[in-house]
Amino acid sequence: MANIEQAPGREALTRARRVVVKIGSALLTNDGRGLDEAAIGGWVDQIAALHARGIEVVLVSSGAVAAGMVRLGWGARPSAVHELQAAAAVGQTSLAQCYEGHFARHGLRSAQILLTHDDLSNRKRYLNARSALRTLVSLRVIPVINENDTVVTDEIRFGDNDTLGALVANLLEAEALVILTDQEGLFDADPRSNPAAQLVLDGRAGDPRLAAMAGGGSGVLGRGGMTTKIRAARLAARSGAVTAIASGRQMDVLTRLVDGEHLGTLLRPEHAPLAARKRWLAGQLQVRGSLTLDAGAISVLRERGSSLLPVGVKALSGSFVRGDMVVCVDEQGERVAKGLANYGSDEAARILGQPSHRIESILGYMEAPELIHRDNLVVL
Ligand SMILES: Nc1ncnc2c1ncn2[C@@H]1O[C@H](COP(=O)(O)OP(=O)(O)O)[C@@H](O)[C@H]1O
Ligand SMILES: N[C@@H](CCC(=O)OP(=O)(O)O)C(=O)O
Image (tube, rainbow, N blue to C red; front, side):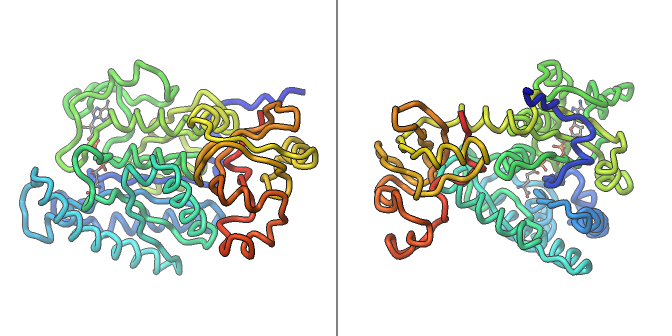
């Protein structure tokens, strides 16, 4: 029987095991008076509650520039890049301290991760960021992510954290992205200039009509307004995640959303997570090389969805580096799977046919026991 997975709706939030929560600048700061520590404490309490239910939460938090401005005694957001960078550097330490202190009340640890566009677009760094984040999550640490504002220039910055949140949801294959902002959700027009605007309860992330609703840009402290939130929902949908846009000021918003309450706006992906992820992986990268698998490897890939170990690979061709896309073929050259290689072609050639416990003695190090991890593998 065909596996008919439905594209997720509200129930995706109640079922989610991994959620990316993005908290925007518009919410985090106390009317320009620095970080709203009490509000941050409230979100941390909710995240701790989700964590206690076994839900993995990854936080994307803005607020560095706004917090830094206050600490430096600046009344208005600077426009010069070097001043924004200085404010971010000063503010990021208070932001990280604030989260660390609140998570510690719950006996939880947080970790600061500062990312740039390059970290997510360069394949090798993408895999490195992914394994570091996965390790943190498996250690039950809450990663607190922000853009590395101090080193980015205008041309390469995400600018808003909505986009960063969506890319993190892709990176970690989270089932849901929750964007907390200063409005109840997406309205059919900017509620600040249109008091009669209506809240959109539910929609398709790819619906082209959504873009027309987001007008007027962002607030004084935020960066992208609703435009970047809609784009983020579209990006998150590529790996099958639903996006909820809701007010961070609503009491217990995170726990209520996860309990299935209809708060804010829910933007659904077209495809179910597995199908979306496969399309994304398969369409994303150019194939740089080819691996010929033995019959045993082919059957475990197809039947058990296992990772590809070097022991099941008979030959390789092409020149590729760690993180490149390679195609897996059978001995007749028929395509079996595609995936991201954990080793470059030079290293892979040396470990072909070998059991994984020998990788370290052959190469002098072991990046991973598998040549392609099952999460990075699409069976064709
Ligand atoms: N259609 C819309 N629905 C809701 N908010 C909108 C809409 N269009 C524009 N906005 C504006 O987007 C702002 C939120 O974005 P932003 O200031 O970037 O916040 P954040 O820092 O949380 O990302 C709201 O305060 C609102 O004025
Ligand atoms: N990285 C910046 C945040 C950028 C920003 O404000 O984004 P957003 O919260 O999406 O409006 C900071 O920490 O100040």
